[in-house]
Image: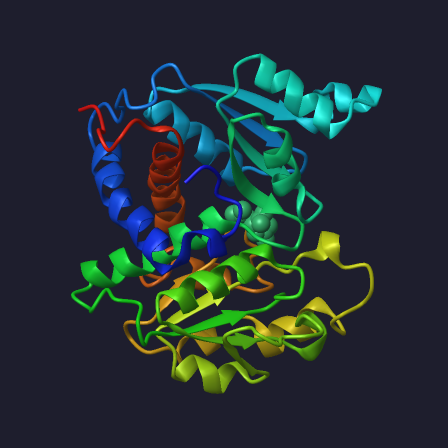
Length: 314
Ligand code: NCD
């Protein structure tokens, strides 16, 4: 594997390989000194053209725990503001010794473009426009498996009923998660008002529902998406209050969930919009576990892209 641009690049076997390797890095992360020398001498650059808290810090933490050096590029303080092109930026950072680029950009497809210019360096898609966010999907699949195992449930995703709720239209997280959950055999239902669904779902391995209450009672996993207000340039819902009333996981609605159903959210959360504050702290909400597992999943991805032949180096 040279790049990780889309979940589709991995296929079922590739996803399984990442999830399997993640177990080792969860173990490393639990050590008093959570660090291995696996990527000593390698340089991982985060190339972020869009705001981010957890994804950038998660990749940088992952790189540091593997003993790689890190460089951070954020557009706000860079020569992009002097007119430097993406290509020149990539070539400049490669000339400084970048071995991997983690790319986040507001436009779909940019990580593929960076891969074409990266001159041998690996590229990981850290979120491109509305398109994909593959490491988010990997950490979500990992979190569901682990949380189910911890509760004494069958950890396999095959046959699990997963509801992905909310602003699917603008969500790269939803696109990657549909691919990943479906590849592992889960049955995915999208729950959203018609205005927040993509105009054409041909080829998506999903069911669609506009009735959250009915779907909730029958699902093993409910995955709430953030309302992407910054990407909505027209009124797609009558009001946020109306949205919450029909599609929010309110405290009342959370009572419809089965006792062992898990609640996930990629963050950042709009508390009180797509998820009620007390639901976010419910024992079956695994939102902070998603963040913790995210570091280990990204360690696995960086190791597979840059590491030397299967040796974790102690
Ligand atoms: C998501 C993103 O930026 O794509 N957040 C994340 O990476 N954890 C989801 C979002 O912004 O809604």
